[in-house]
Length: 275
Figure 1 (cartoon, rainbow, N blue to C red):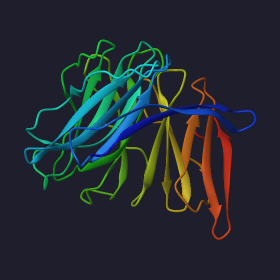
Figure 2 (cartoon, rainbow, N blue to C red):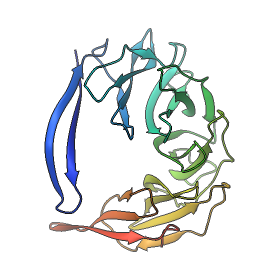
Figure 3 (cartoon, helix red, strand yellow):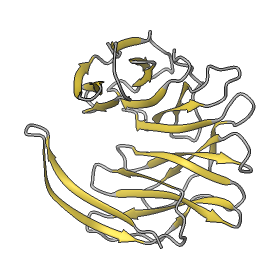
């Protein structure tokens, strides 16, 4: 069967060198067809890995925790085999909890909604809650998430693939609260065909979103109160999707490509509002 492997290394941000890369563990899921995999690393060096796999005509999500010493927990069932779980994103909060947001369909032909679940340090799970209902106006995927500061929650963003009411692939976002509730649904100022939304938390309980819109990179800040600040265009011309990084003390950088054959990889610092 397939193998899921975790490797860890140390990275020197001054010299941009990777050191001491080694394999922590490798294990085989109980299927020959892993559909998707996501992972998150805590501030103590723990790793959570979640994956989806076929089960009785549906798809279920499972989870394992890997400790810093390389030991692996038993498999944890996140969802039952009553629906189809899909792509996911996961993040740790400062207190050692983690939250997973994942696609969920009743049947394979249904538009994808989004569900969420909290994972506690003792490997117990909270109840599964709804992040976004699937339907004629909502088919969600390509999820990104980052834990927010000071409130024990997270900021999630994704693309909506429905053309009506559109625009197709618009960016949507929502706060995930520690009590299994969610904030209001936010509609950043994204255009048709937007790609690769990124999420990076700030120090004030909100976060920054960035995505590619045509050939430009757009950025928009979400406040802790779930309000959208004006959209910014930090990069006017790029030739590929961008990445967004943060040091979680309000240091943001967007990484992007310019040109083609040859192309250049560039980065620039951003203010917390994306300018």
